[in-house]
Length: 337
Image (cartoon, rainbow, N blue to C red; front, side, top):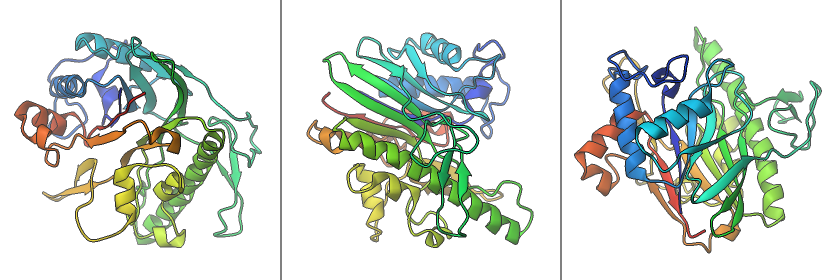
């Protein structure tokens, strides 16, 4: 079975208010890329991946008028993808949903949230992901009340062979200091965002631990917007959210390599153009982490990087499509389940 995670930049911009794809020359939201160009590129990438399930990060919006499910089903139909069913969870408070696009002939998936619902006072024992989490990060002796703007998607999955497992799709809050107008504001917002991100990671880690203690096969997929050494504020808290989520028991080879902090090449899953410069920044942001019980199932990871993966580089159509479709590249896991 092949599972994948893919952050699709500005996916919502490719649909009208009736969830119909906009195959036209209007700008997509990606720099110098039209909607038709991005849609066609995404079709090439999804077809080439041929995954049994894709955790789509920044999926099309659900806002009362638009529907993530309807939009993704239309996209899958246009390109005749096997992944023709969609599972979604709690709607985002902002934009950018998390959704699983999957092949119903290979697996079944249903939203199955765990944890207690809370009021505004919250709970400290890992409540449901649409609720409020109470935590003191021991930085300023102040207890924080934390919510997910994009609640992780908890899924109960059964494969065609009868294997039951849990999938969690996550998109942790970005640390970008939006709205900052000077250095002090940048520092203040960046630290606040990192506090929130680490609190979210601790909340999510608590759920992971409970599954592992119960021996439940678990796969965490998504964009964690973080990694060891990614910014200068990490030293204030000691660990990145990736380190918190991995713990000693989850495994992702790219994350483990990055944590070693040794000189040499580190895998990357995203490529951004620096503001005001003709240069690009690459980062490892997207992960597929698996629990110990799945390590015996012959897992093989792959980052579909147009420059670092030989097969992607050797196919010009796919290479160009990966660069056009998003500022992130898919990560896939082939596993015998």
